[in-house]
Amino acid sequence: MKPISKYETIRRMFSEFKQPTYRYAQIMDSIFKQNIGEFERMTVLPQVLRDELTRTLGPYVCSIVPVKELNSTQVSKVLFAIAGGEHVEAVRLTYERGWKSYCISTQCGCGFGCKFCATGTIGLKRNLTAEEITDQLLYFQLNGHALDSVAFMGMGEALANPHIFDALTILTDPRLFGLGYRRITISTIGLLPGIDKLTRDYPQVNLTFSLHSPFDDQRSELMPINDRFPVRDVLNALDRHIRHTGRKVYIAYILLRGVNDSPVHAEAIAELLRGRGPGEHLYHVNLIPYNSTEVTPENYLPSDLNRIKAFVRVLKSKDINVTVRTQFGSDINAACGQLYRAE
Image (tube, rainbow, N blue to C red):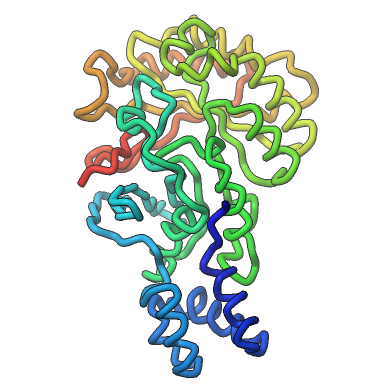
């Protein structure tokens, strides 16, 4: 049975109490405009309603508990305790222009076992509920941070968790977070059913596909999911996504020194992305410098600058749109692939 969010619980409770509809709006205004995180402090409500909210949902609006926060230049990483004695991490990035972006977890751990990823060494503990997903953002909201954009690139594979779609509904509800679809990015290792559902039901959400090798045999070694959903099948689904939405698709590619960062790999990526029809110009490759941790294999190392530049040159010579992603937070294990629910 699907868990009911706090927002739906409040709506139902007020209906049972025969409260006027504006009461629900008052609570949402208290949370999302006044950043009030405790029901008792919502003095716009009668005491009897505050007592009932506290009795039903507990004293705090946010269901997850921050237990540790690490800060670095432009980055803050928060460890949250969730039900069942588990932990997840979320990251806030602040860019020089003041834009704030959030990297949010959708699962506690991950069961897909990508060889270079710290989160994958945990295994899958469980899916997060829609509320646990969105409460990571609610924590930052209640602490006065603007929610400019959100990426589901934290712990876990977003499209493996069916609650992700309920989370999207909560985040885009104008009475709640009110985020525009285009400010949300979902990253996937290539789960075809989820990609097709996103294309059909959430066409304006940004989509990122984690490639990491253009060769099926090597990709299967790095990312076992490739045996179920090979690169070419995923790209066909991404072609459908582009045709249906007319929007860019991002290809994430972590560069591993001597593993997948050769000019041959760059040429093979170009070969995959060219000749895909009228939408081929909407593919954009994001190259990600690798971030090692104490739990990832020692044989995976970041590419050196010259190899990265050579890789970019090959892609650009083939007219492939490419960006080398700026990395923040590696010193506090807050960069791509480093989230590990460290306590």
